[in-house]
Length: 190
Image 1 (tube, rainbow, N blue to C red):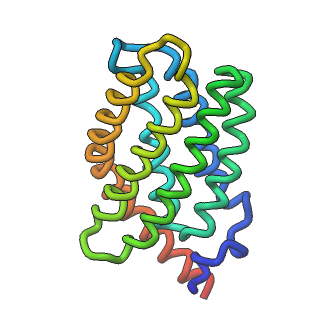
Image 2: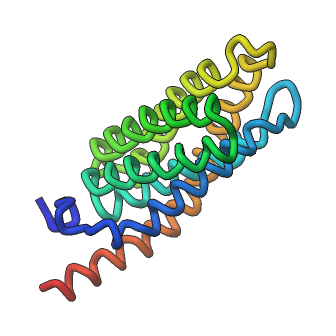
């Protein structure tokens, strides 16, 4: 196991940028999901997929164990802030869906990270986790409310599929930066 894979070598202070990014994306998405664009889509569909980009870049740079720490801490912060900003039902639905989906993303990405094409791990992990996130979130947040949650869920997943493809571009660009930063950190530690 390399030092980057060992979570004890990464104090929370070092992981603070992805933790903050994760919490911000989730809280903004929890507010945005309450504003429908139409019967098929809410504004949250356009912001939440960025959480998978944060997770995948963190996994690429720090490894799966440190990324799970980012998910847990980001989850805690996001749920607390979301109760205040979006209400308890949205916060609980979001927290449940977020935790399950992000941990699935970490697992799949980590298993695929060295399997051929650079795009396979972020695309497969994001699509798989997005399906779980969408199903959990929309059923917990909106079932029984009279709102068109099924069509919102379908629209949301459609956008997440498109965003997973579109976010491959910044992933690839940022992956080069993350890889260079990791190599520089390894050299300075040696």
